[in-house]
Amino acid sequence: MWEKDLNIHDIREIRTRTSVFFGVGAIKKIDDIACDLKSKGIDKVIVMSGKNAYKATGAWDYVEKALKDNNIGYVNYDQVTPNPTTHHVNEAAKMAHDFGAKAVIAIGGGSPTDAGKSVAILMEYPDKNANDIYEFKFTPEKAAPIVSINLTHGTGTETNRFAVVTVPEKDFKPAIAYDCIYPMYAIDDPQLMTKLSPKQTKFVSIDAVNHVIEAATSTVASPYTVTLAREVIADVAKYLPKANANPDDLEARYYLAYAAMMGGVCFDNGLLHYTHALEHPLSAVKHELAHGLGLAMLLPAVVKVIYKDRPNILADILSPIVPGLTGNPEEADKAAKGVQSWLQSVGVSEKLIDEGFKEEDVQRLVDLVYTTPSLGGLIDIGPSGNGREVVEEIYRNSLRPL
Image (cartoon, helix red, strand yellow):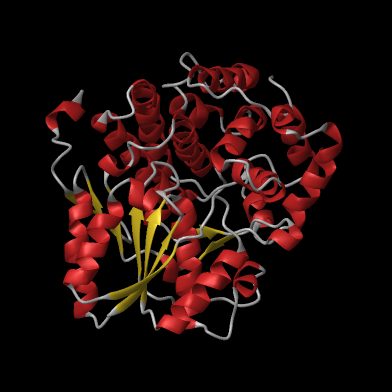
């Protein structure tokens, strides 16, 4: 109950590689951020957003005023969609170049920030394009400054060096990770997250849970990632039902946002493996598929595969959602079905077959895991090896309930 001793309206600066302004009302810190940008000679920015949320949440009112008060000009690329593509990045990069933007302000969930990180790279490499980035034709060492104003509690991209963009012509959805794309500043304000739909609330929170399960069980996991994972899962288990019941519950949003932020730091250290590597082909093939739903459909099968290799870690970190695990490798099925039951309890029961995937799609999905740039690196650090049989087993076990 230590949470009761903290005031969620106190804005705290949490230092990772990014300075994160965190708490109810943190959006007001955009004034300080804009002032700092101006002091560094940044007088023009590109704002990356979707079409509606940046305004509907009220975030834009604060951002626009701060930019005007500090005489910072802006252009707004407001066409970013879930699962952003290289086309979005290239269009926005051209807009930024034509305007003379010197920094990126991203407002939204993971998609605007990931697209914004990619644009920030191209602002420093005008002879390159998004395909060059996501087909790994060069290694960027610099990017324009990035500010991430986060409107969801899931991705953690506001605090780490990762970005994901789809190459639609090839059904590739690679991930990049470069030190130059850590945001300079981030804002996590729970009051901006209350307008998330019920489905988004569930899916983004499940994304955070997946981040830490993978980061705590990869072959590069550490005590740090396990510790973070335990806290993240406990917070999501406690506060997701409260946010589902009352979307305006600021305390619930506060701790879900904190969980997501920690999740971003967690996989910045322990990286990701099977669940994300196998989800990326799903939403690369079906662009409308929510990333968090894709992860939810895969997670029980992933737990079933990896439990024998990390039984003690999983028994510990899963205890808030699957009580009674002892760390016996023979509990794999119990652990997997327990995760599946928890997902059902928060309103997510879909499996791959419900989203239009069929048995005959499995081999194509497996092939995409091994041909999409970067995903092989995730499979390589999975605790159960990088064999195709592991990947195929997870996909097949995800078609229907366990």
